Amino acid sequence: MELGFPLLWLSLILPILASLTVVALPPRTVYWLLAAALAIPGVVSTYYAFQGVLSEGVVDPLSIDLSRVGIGVVALAVDGFSYPFVLGVSIVTALVAVYSYKYMAVRIGEMEREGGRAPGHAAYLTLYSIFSSAMLGIAYSLNFLLFIIFLELSLLSSFLLIAFYGYGDRRRIALLYFVWTHIAGALALLGGLYYVIKTGTFDVATVEGGRIVYFASPVDRSVYAAIAGVSLLLGMLVKMAVFGVHMWLPYAHAEAPTPISALLSPNLIGLGGYGIARFAAAFYPWLLEDLRPLLLGLAFVTIVYGGLVALSQLDFKRFLAYSSISQMGYMLLALATLHPLGFAAASLIFLGHAVGKAVLFMTAGVS
View 1 (cartoon, one colour):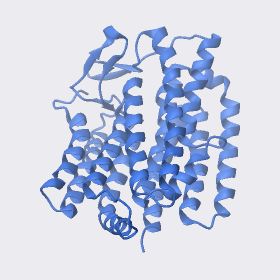
View 2: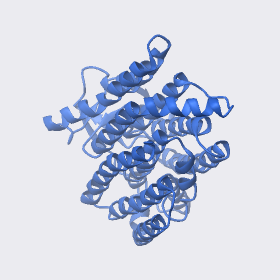
View 3: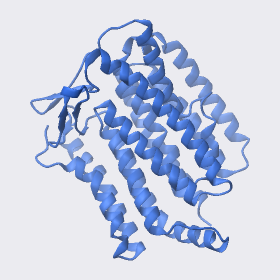
């Protein structure tokens, strides 16, 4: 179903506009405005879910056709698979925005007393709104290049939030986080570029009669296709922080300000799983089929490793970070089935983990 109004694009712009009102309104009011703006996507997508139209998809009418230059159609949409991701990001970012006001007031005061340069509420609100909108954009994307752009926006904004407001050696940790996740994005983009060379588009679907129609991926079992597919898959696995490529996660979450930890662990890493289901499985389905035993084994190792290491942690935030690694193992296990029910289970794991883990991270910041 095509919307009569560009509501999805507007839902990305409103949080940023709300954050800019800090120049005229008290910070407390702006945090509440930001929370209200971030809640809109969850309310709207839930409304259409109850209308029963998400099986066909809800498409924003504002789109840019760049097919002539090999990019495809830049458009936003929500369907039955992406709905739990949109809902999870919307709920958590709205709740954490409200939570952030008192937390950041205390944190900014601490930094000023320590003699450091403390960016104020205006910088935090702007970066937070960009980070939140970028994660929503990731879940809205049916075009891989648009997905990568939103992924990089989420990386840059979260990197600055850790570097500006984090704890300990925050700049070094922020750089570690940036390098790991930026490499992941580059690997994913490399995998997507081969697909566009073969097909002439970054799109995974088109819209016909207001209905989302997904493309059938060309069967290309060449060595180059295998390398590209592994590159895309590896990039998303780094984003998920599964075993073997998880090293950046505990450091970033332990030193990040707690509101950002509450977004990084439940939301952002889970969107790596969204990338696997939406793009890797669509571009290179035969490769994931061939690698299924390996992915299943990696999922089990991640589940056990994350759980056991979490039990040995004395720092509460590191405990939650390793717990999230274990949860990503469950999500990968569901995705590795390569079955529609497995993909549905992965989206529900994301939603439950997003809300539950965000609440636990917020308790870590309560003094």
